[in-house]
Amino acid sequence: MYNKRPVNFAGVRGNAVLLAQQFVGEVLHKGCVAVDATAGNGYDTLFLANIVGESGRVYAFDIQQAALDITARRLKQFGLENNVKLIHDGHENMNLHIDSPVDACTFNLGYLPGGDHNSITGPSTTVKALQIALDLLKPGGRISLVVYTGHPGAGEESRAVEEMAAQLNPSLFGVLKVTFINRSLSAPFLIFIERVKKEK
Ligand SMILES: C[S@@+](CC[C@H](N)C(=O)[O-])C[C@H]1O[C@@H](n2cnc3c(N)ncnc32)[C@H](O)[C@@H]1O
Image (cartoon, rainbow, N blue to C red):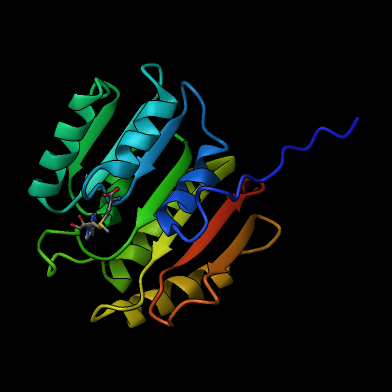
């Protein structure tokens, strides 16, 4: 019997954040461990917390206390604050806060919409955090990155992230770049990574 699930593209077309959520959401269920590497306004944290439930765990990082406060309020509104650890630290220090294997991790790069545009993700810290997240990722686990290209500094970061992702060993990781080819060159793009197996 043919029982492959169809990809539900309707409803998320054109929206990079929803596409990223759909990609990681597919491998998450109650009890899973997920990471939001950039908590920001808390939408991704809320999405992850809702899927992994009370028996799961979400670690959400941001360098801005204001972002963590917004995220905390959003979680509380939906009664989902209990299974989320909000961490006021850079995602490049993820390994200091997480010691268990991770099922999924989201990176939504750039700055906090409506917040301080100087508190921005950067090439070296993003690449370092991505390497740590890859090391923590379980086989079958997924990482999504929403990468922006329009703001100052974004070009350097997007090139660094893409360069690193392109060099991942294909026997260990599936890596996909998704671009909106009918939009302006400054439209965001996505990197999707799935760990195939653990290194021996
Ligand atoms: C585009 S926003 C994230 C949006 C968020 N995922 C949401 O659902 O609303 C990017 C966030 O990354 C944060 N950020 C910048 N550098 C960071 C770092 N090194 N570690 C963790 N967060 C960082 C910014 O403070 C900002 O809040």
